[in-house]
Structures are given as C-alpha cells and as structure tokens.
Figure 1: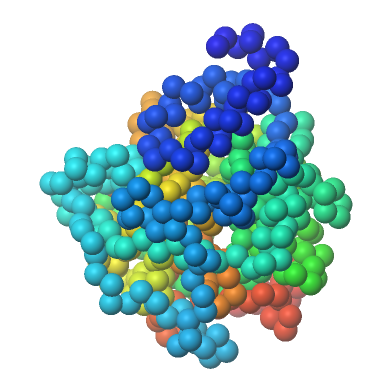
Figure 2: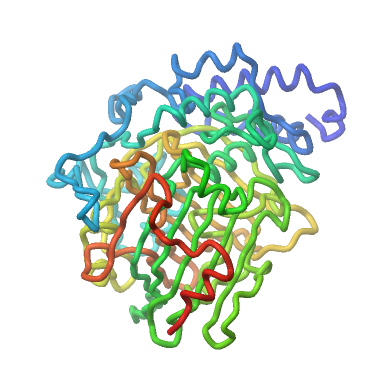
Length: 493
C-alpha cells in the first residue's frame, strides 16, 4: 500500500483493520503479524480512532475479559486462564504491615535461561533481554509459574465496558488527548480502549492503567557504574497517585483532573533533603500534558518546571534516566509514531515481591547487573508497541519498543535505541499486585545501559527499617502536599 492510498475513504480499511485486531488476540507469535501491520499503521496515522461498535464490544466478558485480555490460557497451559486475579492475602494486615507479604513464597523456578541455552527460548525473549544475556555470561532469568494476578474492582470494570464504545483519541496531534462519555467529555475511570486499534490507544491504556488511588512509598535507589561502583541516589518519601481511581472523586478534584501524579519529598542525602517534586499528568495536551512544580529549600518557593519532560535527564536519578521514562513511559505521545505490532508471548518481569518487598536492595546489586536470584520472570501475553521518532522532532532516542501486559495494561519491559539504531537501554518495570485494594504497583524500575555498561535500580528495598510500601483507595487523612503552597510548607531541611 502506498502512502497516497491513505487519502481514500477509510470505511473498508478500518473494517479490515478491526478484523485484524480481533484476530490478533489469538496470535501467539508477533512474527506472524509483521507483514500485516505496516499497511494498517500507515493508513491509521493521522486519523482519530476510538470507540468500537457494540457488536465488537460483545467480545468483552466472553472470549475476552472485560478489560480486553484473552480469557483462556495458551495452548500448552503455561499461561493459565484468567480467574479474577489475586484476592487479598489473609496474612497481610494493611493497617500494620509496611510491606506486602509474598503470596508465592516458596515457589521454585520452572527453568533457568542463560547464555548457554537462550537459543532454545529465543522467541520468548525480548530484544533487551537477549542483549543482556549476550553481554553478560553471568546473567540469567529464573522463570517461575505464571500467575495472572491483576485484579480489577467492579466499578472500574463497569467504566471500562462503557469506554469500549465511547472513548476516542482526540487532539490536534495524533494521540494528544482522550475523550469519552463521562463528565467533562472524558472517559470513565477504567481502561479507555480495551480493544485497541493502534499504538496510541494501547499507550493510553498504559497511561490510565488501574492502580491504587494512592501508593505511599519510602524506598531506595542506586546506580552501578561499569566498574561495579555503587552510587546511592536521592531517597524520596513519595505518594504515587492514580487520582481517577479514588471513587469519591476528591483526589481527582485536588489533582487538576490528573490521570497520574506524584508528590515526592527527598529525605536523603543531606544535600538533597527537602527538595520536592509535584507532578500532575493530564488527560489532555493542556500545559504540555502536565503540570510540574519543583521546590528547593535554598529558594524556599515552588517553581513551575515545564521542562521536566521528554528526554530531559532527571537529576535526582543521577541524570541517567529521562523524564518520560519513569513508569516505563509518561507524558505526551507527540514526538513519536506509535505502532501496534500485535500480541505475543514473552518472558517478562512479573509478581516481583522479592526485590520490592523482601530483599535488601544493596544485596541485589551485582557487579554488572542485578543478581538474578532477586528477580522473578514469568511467561505472559503482551502487546508490543513500537515508537519511531517523527521526522523533524527532537528526542535522544530514535526508536522505542514497549511490552504491555495484557491483564494490567502496564508496561512490563521496554527498549530504547540510539540514532545509529543500536540498542541503548533495556528497561524492566518490576511490578507487583496490590492485592489488598486491587490494581498493580509499577513504581520500581531497573534500567541497563547496554552501551556504557551501567545500570540502575529505582524505588526498591521496602523491607528495610525506615522504608515501606502502602496502598490506599483514597487520600483521606494522608495529608499529601498537592499544591505548591503545601509543598513549600513541608520542604524544610
């Protein structure tokens, strides 16, 4: 198909593409889709998309789950059927426990993938994982039984079903905003596009993925250089928030209607103590799609920081992570063309209770990479989205690839490429299910620079004294600093 073909009426093309998307839900290997995607993506670029027909939406709750994942397991049984996710663990007391109890403690790996046997599992490995296995003889993946642990609440399922036939992409630039049938012409709280038709919709599913309304964390972060030297990064006492999932709507009202926000007070080292970030990520492109304030005790006032976006390095993370890399991806989608490649089975990080809740993070730091015994990998179905930098746009990365878990819609792994097309970074989002309130915590990240040889671990070590992970269904009585004035009041050394 030539580019000029996209000027023809879209009805037949869209009908065919929707049929292809339906068939994708049954595809086990993304290679089978490669020849189909370029022509479809070409015609989709530059057109707004969204709501599927009522007939298409009937798949939700039948062959698909209500949130758009395949309900059944895979052919060989290594991925089980979805049965509702992980229910609350009785041993966990959310009133007193500072960390989540590992419900899979005692499970042993089914098998281990190393440099010597990676060829046997090549189709199941992400490109970033292959790069690490090829680079480090000591790197390996311990692959555990697959648990589809993501659990939704009924009212969020209801919102998702409504979104299926009403939510749409909007904005002057493709994917710049979402609209829907809820108040303010916005989607309902829930997955906006449970049957995605393009990469932009899949990425909005990630951006609006269900997680606890408030996740209060005090964790640690480290960078390990190519020689094995460890640098301790700033330690934040932070509230990560998904305001739309406070059912009362109060947090949403207090957060500028943000779909994602965080208020992070640095507590150490001494030179960073008192510095605070207050970020709100919006469902529209207004204010560049975000509102950000930055407070330093020396200036004693919170200043707007609109430049904390895209590929600006984050100083609190040693300058080796970009602002749009946190959580796998945040911010506007305007500098890349996002293509939905398809769905496939991959071995990815999942149910990572050990490194987030149990392990002293210093003990997890190996000379070249995180110690394999501290990580948990499972086989899951993922949507693959590729993003190529638009002609004329500026960004450090030329190409990015994201792997989105079909159940949580969160990014679980990602890769970035430099201008020469060489793989630059591999990223793992070390998520775990917040089984007490539903949803998934995706606030712990590991990034390996495959060119320089350094790596980083962000927001780990909740098990250590003075650190924690807690989740809440609303912000009541939490006293979160949600305004510049509140930030100034708390940001004192």
